[in-house]
View: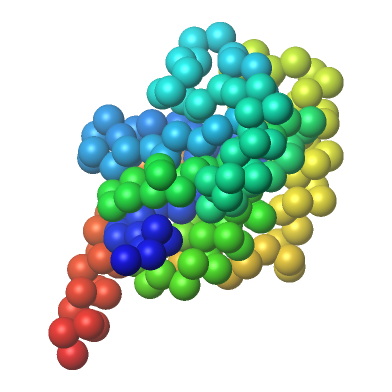
Length: 193
């Protein structure tokens, strides 16, 4: 069996502060859909825990992991490396990624991967980043990066698009779970036909 065979997994993509990380946390606490813990070279933020929020490693370790072919996908963002390792991929997991990562997961061609794009306005995302304590220079850098990375015409096609400005984070998580469960059910029914 291939290491890429994934069963019933959620992929969340969206720009900075679109709500994907908080939604993933609620999917874990309310529905038992655990977050794929990605590996990063960025420093820990206040209240983050190594091995829970991310696996925090130095750049040398990350580059060694690339050479060992341990990632499904990886990217550089805002001067730091991020990636999801093959050993984190499993049933009823949720991964939070950027457009390149989204393409990598779509490229696995597994019909049981359910993809979501979470969207909100630049103004809302800016406000959310201020509220979570991000530095102004980092916010501006993320906004500029996201303008280029999240051009809608160049994004891969996802299964579901959610405007997170229309819901609070708990409602977003509830909606994702509902859509996910319905998609799994529909795909099971279609396989039986």
